[in-house]
Length: 316
Image 1 (cartoon, rainbow, N blue to C red):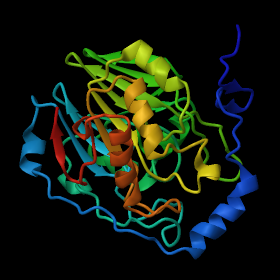
Image 2 (image 1 turned 120 degrees about the vertical axis):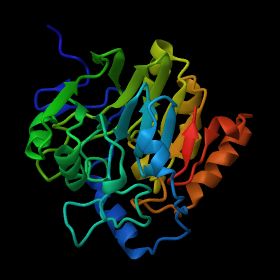
Image 3 (image 1 turned 135 degrees about the vertical axis):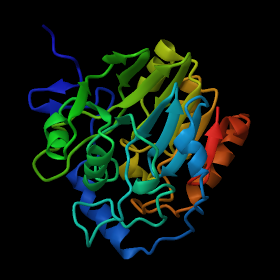
Image 4 (image 1 turned 60 degrees about the vertical axis):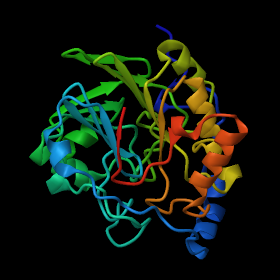
């Protein structure tokens, strides 16, 4: 049987990229990141209506908790994307990117969580303390790309489903499909690209949600649009893109985020992956400004690709 083009003997790869985001430019990037103080201001956190969110079982909503973490409510389910509620995006409690804004909803105030969509294993997306606490208090089903089951079991996650790209998991009328995005994986020095990365398309109650996870721009989004479009709600990254020559293979900029919005036929997109951690060198508040300019240049109404505040709930 032929091996899928994104599979390698000891891991995975990006079919549309030469994977130039490697060690060659890492040292200069880290030096630039470390010597520059963060410019710009992070977004202000709103206070969500916790009583509504805890009791809601009928209204489709999405609430941005910060970074790539959304609480999506659909078809009576509470779903978290890449839940990260810890003070740092780092394996170390005393170093690494520090959280600049508080989580819009902390762990004790979350509604009962039914499922978690986990895009990949990087520390700003797979947060061990958050997942451990969720497993203990909520026991959610966790859907992740190939290669994550052992790590998640170590964190106490008992119900884990691994998916390859284009594979689908169905249960009780809800369908989750892992879709290809362009990124990489690794939590240490010896496990680069041993675990797969992915976005997800969630279908339930006659609606479709696309969670892009973490990604560079590639032809994959046009294919997602062909297979699933139009998408009712898309959660698309807009930040962590500078310096561009180093970040382009793995992180879209706001202009490319607009292309994703168009490629998948999104009726409504919400911006994420900006303003929570200083992961790269662009000013903290630049991504929303560039997104609005890119939407105007593409003659797209900015009400269809919104920049929301952390804690803001969108009804869709």
